Length: 397
Image 1 (tube, one colour):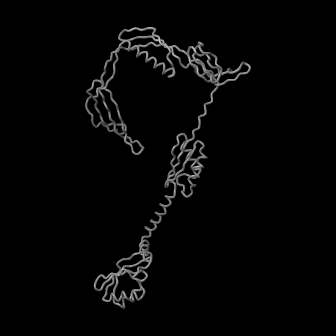
Image 2 (spheres, helix red, strand yellow):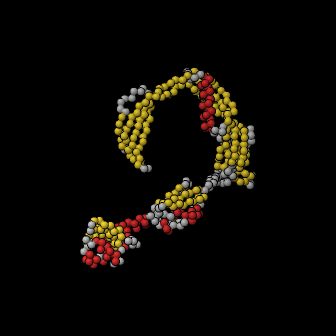
Image 3 (cartoon, one colour):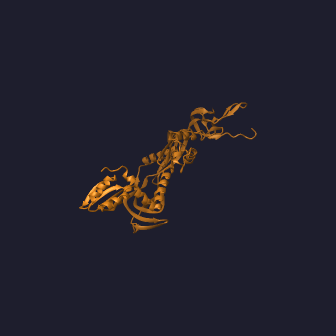
């Protein structure tokens, strides 16, 4: 027979039927209009059938007439599942509440991340996002469309050229592209450019202000090179003098270079000690024994244990003891002179600017005694000689 529709929703039973007149019982079911299916004989006077739950109570008259007996083997369908759930009311209620809570939690914003910002503070970005309704524990269905959020936040953050808002599940990610805003020059009081040392001017360029010297002029330390006062005594204006002034300056150096030099060299022999560090205590694990090297250096490496991004108060420490020896190197007097002059030049460049240019050098005194070379050298150097000096007015002016 055909299987009725929606048997899972309506509920159905699987029955075992026994009796000498099983065939007559099944024919009686058909005559009574009771649908049965999956009829299987299981013996001489036995069979299995399936029928709807609603028809089970209509079997009694037919069983009496045919002398058969039935036994329920299986119960299937929604009515039986609902009854089982009804027996477990607490479990059913908990299951419903679980799915309701899960749905609610998946419908909220749990995390707001900010990426790409360097000069704009995270707090300012999160504050702008909160004004647009983007913050933790906000309902997702209450959020505006992502493109509208991007537009509104770009308007709220003038330091950003573009703001992107993206949602992935319960996480909101805000990406920032910062605008290139030129830095405002600091406000400065009027000032002169004066000479830093005695020199002969070789170049003068006044971007702002009044030049007071010319090329080949000899100036002393403190002389005004470019004045920050424009005009005459009756009509004057003060400005921040700007420009570049270069001049020839003389530096005298006393140089002393030994002819025999000692260098430290590693022999390649080393020894290691390992420690387990617990707080401010270190327990040595191996590397015991005395150090057999006459001269040595020690390097210490500490590797703390970490958990995620947090540093724990214990770790691993290693001491590496390396043997060293001294090697002597003898140089000629000419090599010592060259080395001393080069060292003096490096010192001048470090003190007075890498753009300094050496014009001439003259050895004023040179002698070789006690294993050293002694020299007095005069360097003529073209370098920047200008520095700023604020203009200060007397109270009566």
